[in-house]
Amino acid sequence: MITWNQKDAWVGVFDILGFRNMIRKTDQDFPRHMLTRKLEDLFEALDHDVTRNGQLEYVVFSDTIVVFAPDLEARSYGWFLLQCTILIDRSIAIRLPVRGAISVGTAFTSSSPPMIIGPSFLEAHDYCEDQDWIGLLLTPSATLALRQAGLEPLHHDFVSDDLPLRKTGPENVLAYRFQNGSSNYESPLMSFLHEMQHFASDRDKVKYERTIAFIKKHYRYIDSQQGSNSSLASQ
Image (cartoon, rainbow, N blue to C red; front, top):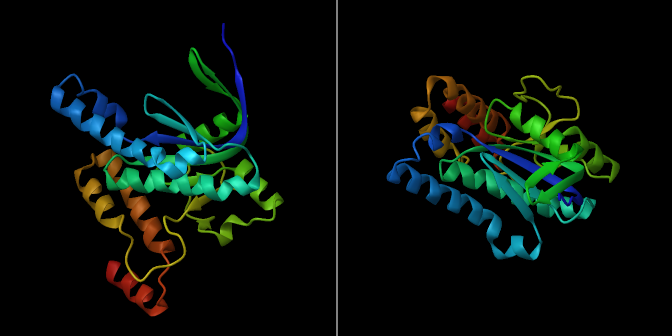
């Protein structure tokens, strides 16, 4: 008998890019060992003390990771967003990149058999799958909920342009710009992205091109002149 658990919460859905190609080789010991190490490293980002104390829940099936905040209160958003950005930054650093989307609302989970249904999960899943890059989006439900609570994501490291969506519309969809505040130095993620782009298939190289171009465009430097010089140097 299926027992559903209702979760009214912030929901993040992440898809591991290139996962299907990886698992085709896991009948061999070395590729399976490498994938296992990367996955363990990625999930460690969700298992540190701060995360456990915040009661973050997550479910993994195939190439999809779903994370739930404890509730859907606006006060939980900042903490939950931090966990999501840690996850996506960590994925790039270990060369197991993901794309993700954050929604808010109701979902239902079952542990036996393991299943997830509900509008918040479906919305986050649809926007996650529709991205043609490595990135993190706020879906319309998340953006509107924050604005109704008096929080403007555009003032907190999200932007509304350059969204690489295939089918879903961009209205009330915002993208995390891979940076908190501003910095004196280039994004530490750039070297990893260039490396992965070099080894990516011709079909996937464009995903890295879009991600790199997006970070360069929206990266903020403490010294505005330095940022200008950096932009010119990258052209």
